[in-house]
Image 1 (cartoon, helix red, strand yellow):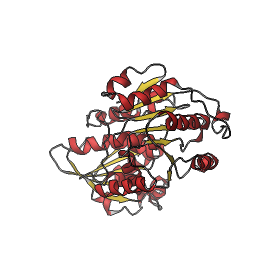
Image 2: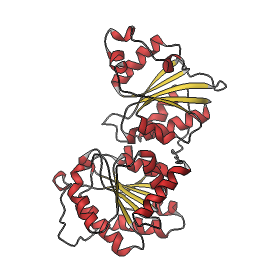
Image 3: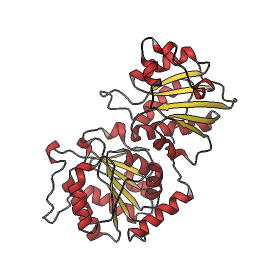
Image 4: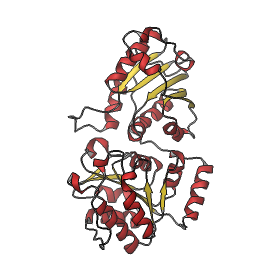
Length: 350
């Protein structure tokens, strides 16, 4: 089917069950589609916490859980034909399914049962495609479906109430000016820049810069308990377990973000603050966070070194490129010119 006409006010449903970083990549395209093609209301069939980040978007409808039997029924060889479909699907004009091969089957079957235009978009390129950024990969498919859009990065603006709560949290931690937000963890443990580097970076920031560092520990970062405990004893303020919308608000109040390849790095870029993401085994050319203030640097390390660090030794931070980026971000009038002049392994993705 072809896309519904631009002049009509469209009620759309977007399906996405991927991780936070994948969701935010898709979200930038969804945001543009809503504006460019008159999607007056978008219901999400997705993870509620991810969708909470769209609270300030005027087109946000309802969020419908991906839990329950419906998805498995739609993927069943026979049950898909008789499975009861919910009203949010039956009342839609457009259904957009993001995912990999399994979700394509679901899209094809829904297309046969709904009056809506149902389209499938592969959520990220194959592993052997190392030349196409996910953002461009998505937009190329959307153009083929009749929805040409630009490459505008996603911008998230948390509600004032969330920013007020985040500001109060900073004050409770003894932070009264914009801190450097450090998030070393990642859902993929192999993506974590070795903890010895994070130890050195935190020590360098606290000793050399006129700013406080704020360490963030994610809900799946239990492998960092010893490290975070040592940092807490050293006097580093720590936040953990925040809902995504509160985390986004907190990020928006920070001066700078530095993190591993993770969904939080994509969230920081969407929050609009200067961001440095450290990539290792994954390709920054494909996965770098989007944003005019975001830069990704690539590093190599041995897998055995990920969680190796020496808490009893004085760390020596040796990464001159990252140190230079941090200093430049804090002092440059125009961050854009700094990022464009980054050397070595630097990579920028708008």
